[in-house]
Image 1 (spheres, rainbow, N blue to C red):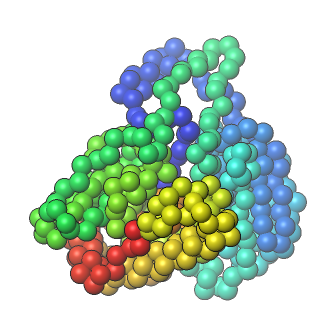
Image 2 (image 1 turned 90 degrees about the horizontal axis):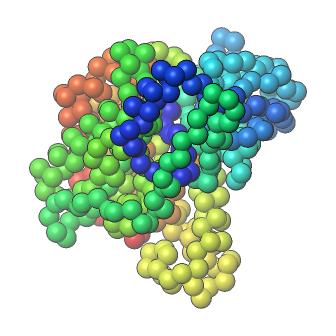
Length: 418
């Protein structure tokens, strides 16, 4: 998944950016040297990549023939391999392109990764490794790329030195202060918020078939889904973005929470090394990511009406943690039920992968009291999927499947805990 470049301090796309980049190219400007990979530390259960400065993002994917796990780090310069341990036989590093360092973990036996995460200062990336069966490994190899991003406080290293230019951009609008989008639909109906992934300076995945951009497909699908929902009149709907603008990840689900949404759906499109990989995949929050987010929220939330209208201000930390944990686990259960419902109701209108429901710690899924899914609508590396995702008919088919599932979800009373 190529979701998700985040820079703290930038929350909107500015129209002059393309002109600025054209001018910089004309005068021969070159970016500053990339962040160096200082070390790759490997234990039997974990790989930790350390940097000497900030990076843009990281992604990981599984390859077979021979069996490998690859980690791409955007904005990094490759180092000198690393020590191996456990299922990892050797560690190799190379420069995949001028802006991307690739770390290849050659496997002595099948293993897969999970729970990718950056450290709080953004200068280390950790990937958990666990042994896998041949079937599980083959499934992971066909699943494509998973992307991970530093925390919101991440900031890019400014260029410095002769022939370079520093451009100061306005500060981001903090989540919770930006204007809210318009809610459309009949008063009193349940509210679903549709999030079109990427946008603005973040194009998302770019297809090798014609250079199509993920951000354009996600926006078109989100708009088509909104229109289909409004035509049915059974729910209210809002879009996190209705044009080509950039939103930081936390801002997306905070918009939905501030609106009081009872369901949040983030739309994306995937990419994979395997060009035959195709079809949609539904992601819900993983158990490990849920626990970590619950602990963090319990530590920082002390005000009234944080969760489900319950005043947690007078409770001690252990009680707050338990209440938030119970709420989020119920939210995760509802999210998983909706994922299965979506597959059942939509598989006749657009194709899914064989392993259609997966779990991950995506930032946009971490609202503790709002059922949320991330829908990868297809693979931009697959020519048939590209044609489907960028055609009006294909977009309407996805919208029809989503609409059917959303209406069934609310008709059954499977609402969240808000």
